[in-house]
Length: 421
Length: 91
Image (tube, rainbow over all chains, first blue to last red; front, side, top):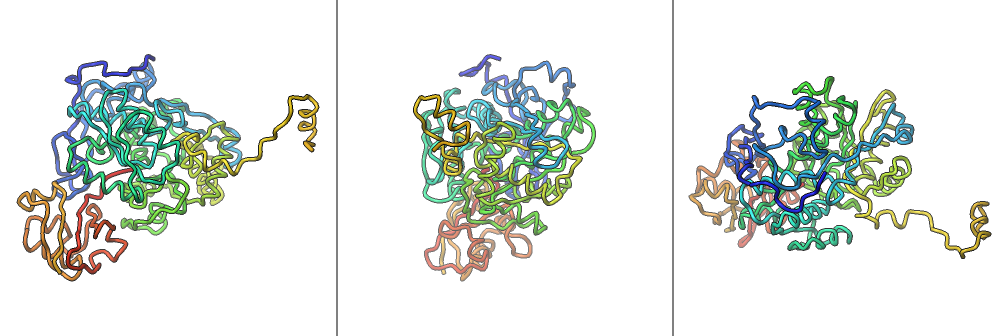
C-alpha cells in the first residue's frame, strides 16, 4: 500500500465516539477527556450496537493495516492519519514451541510495526485520529520510550506539534529515536510514575492531546487490533493461550476485549484464549496482585533494566488482573538475567530481535511452561512489542565475543576447526 | 496543621471552580475530611463512605505518592502541599 505523510481526507469526515465510565456507567460526550467527572473512573468509547459489521471476506479484502478493523475502532467515518500502522507478521516458531513444550507457538511480531518499531504505533494511530477529530494541533505523552518514539514519528508526518516527557534514565536509542523527529522532548528527573503524574497535570493545564492521559480512552482501543490480527492470521481462529508484557496493563485488558468482540461478532468460534501477563521482577505490581488476589494494587518503585515495563503504579493493573483471571490465565515475573536470556533465545528460535519487554515475555512464557501453566496441547502466541535495536545495552555484554581475523583463508579454516589460537 | 490541596479541573467543578484549597489536620485523612466538610459536593469524590481512598484517586504529598507513606494515615505538617491526581493515566 502507499504510505502517507499528510492528512489524506477532510478531517470533517471523522468524528470520535462518545464515552462511558467503566466504573460507574456515567455517559460523557466525545472529547479529549478520559476521566469520569462523577467517580474519576476510566472513560471508554461507546460503540453503536447496531452498526453494520464486515464479514471475514470483506475484512480480508481491505488494506493491510489496523484500520481493516475500523468498525471496532472508536470513530465514525474514515481515519485521516496514520493509515499504514499495524498488520504485523504472525511468525510461527517450531523451535520456540519445542522449548516451551507446547504444540505450536507463534510470535506476534510488533518489532516491525510501522513507523516506529513497536506496538505503540497502534495506540498512537488511534489517538492521533482522535486529536484530528477534536481539532487539536498538539499531542504529547508520558513515555517509557516506545510511546515517545511513536508519538514523535506520527506527529511529525501529520504536521502536529508534540510535547514528549520521559524519565531521565531511558536508553540512548529511545531518546534519539524520539528526538530525531523534532518534537519538544523533555527529560524529567524521576521515575515513569513521576513523569506520568506530571503529564496528568500538563494535560489539565495546557489542553493538549496527551495520548495516554486525556486521549487515553481512544488510544487504548488501538491495542485491540493485536487480538484481531492474531485471529485473522491464524485463519480466523483463536490460540489457546497468549502471553503479553505488562507495563500499565492496558494491552492484556484490550486483548481480552478484542478477542471477545470477534467472538461476539461470530468471526471466530471457541473461547477467549487464556491470557498470561509478564513483568520484570524489579517492577511487578500486577503479577503480585494476581498472585495475592483481590483488587487493590500496591504500587512499587521500579528497579529493573526493563525500562519499557517500569511502571510502578499501573493504571490498568486491576483490570488486567481481572482479564487474566476471567480468561483462566495467570501472570509471571522474571529476573533481569532471565529477560536477557529471553531476548537471546527468542532471537535464536524465532529470528526476532526484541527489546527488553520481549525478553520478559519470552522468559515469562518459559517460566509459565515450566510451572505447567502452559500445556503440551497448547497453541501459544507471544506478543513481542518492541525492537531489540532500541535496547542494545541489555544484551551487548551477554553475547559471545566476535573473533577478529586477517583476510586469510587459513584463519577461517581455524575457526571452522574450532581452533582459533 | 494548615496545608494546601491542589485539585484537577475535573474535581474543581465540585468546589465552586476553586483549584487550590486550604485544609487543616494532623494526617492526610484528617485534612481530606476537613476538605469534605468545607465542600460537601467534593467529599464523596475524594473518599468512600467509610473514609477510605478510592482506587481511581491518587494523593501526592509533596510530590510523593502517599501510598508509600501510609496512605491517609500519613502525617502532614504546616506548609505541606497535597496534589490530587486521577489514577487513570499513562501506560
